[in-house]
Structures are given as structure tokens and as C-alpha cells.
Amino acid sequence: MAEPGWPRESLIAAAQDGDPAAISTLVSGSHPHVHRFARTLCASPEDAEDSAQEALIILYRKIGSLRATGALASWMFRIVRNECLRRARRAWRAEELSGPETRMSAEEDVLHRLEAQRVAAAVAELPAEQRRVLIMRDVQGYPGHAVAAALGLSTPAMKSRLHRARAAVRERLQDPGLPHHD
Image (cartoon, one colour):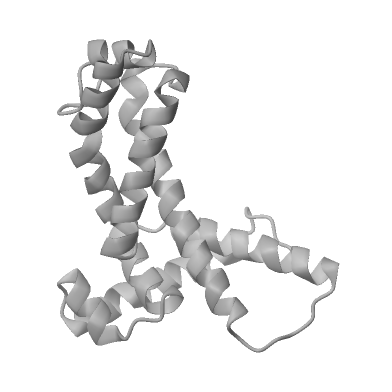
């Protein structure tokens, strides 16, 4: 069964069959839900807007590949989450590239990338409110007062969420169940 507020399963089925009017109606009907996901998952309003637009484009192009009509909400959530993570990783890489130039061996580069994937996975598992603060402050480098203002928090509340987020990531990275690449 479809989630409340999402387009009807009959509309989704018609869109899957390639009906242009159904596809258009499906995309516009999914728009508010996708934007809500993006605002919850992404670090900045700009990333949320871009991620939501990308997710709607993917919905438009690939609705025929959705297997079950009742899975639209979870499919769109995964697309938005992946897009937000991709944008955060890109920001991270841009920050790394602007740092001091150092040469790495191929092995060091692979290990570095694997470690970055572990960190990104740990960040992705954070609750949305902690993830936003962590990404805005530690990845994107916004000053604490700007992060607090952007998220509608007091500075102490922002610092508290940031501390909890960092502690949760640190704990997750020390989890022996995660593969380590030392």
C-alpha cells in the first residue's frame, strides 16, 4: 500500500506503463514529499533543492524501473539520501583538493578512499538533525553561529548536536563490526 499523501497506486502503475500524463502528474504529486525528504537529509537548503530536483528527474526518467507501486516513497527516499551524500562527498573532496599538495601512493589513495567511505557511511546513519549540523560545520566549514542561525537553533543547542554527532561518528568508526582499513 502507498504511503499516505503520495500519489495513488493506479497513477504510479499508469506512469510505469509510460503514460505521459500519469508521469507528469506523478512527478508533480511527489514534489512536496521529495522536497521534505531533501530538507531533512541535506546539509544546506541549496543542496536540498538540488537533490530534490535531481530525484524528480530520476523519477521522471526511471519510473518504469520501479518494481512495486507501493515502494515509491522508499525509492524516492533512497534517491534523495544518495544525492545528498554525493553532494556532501563532493564538498569534502573539494575541500581536500584545496589543501596542501601531497603525493600518495596508489595503495595510500585506495586506503584513504575506503576510510572516506567509512566516514560517509557513519555520517549517513546519524539522525537528520545531527547530520545537518555535522555536515554544515565540519564538512562545509560554516561558522557555528551561521549553522545555528540556518537551522533555527541557539548556539548552545547547535554545539550540543554537533558534539553528539561527532561522538556517534567516532563510536561508529570504532565499531569492530565495520571493516577497518588500517
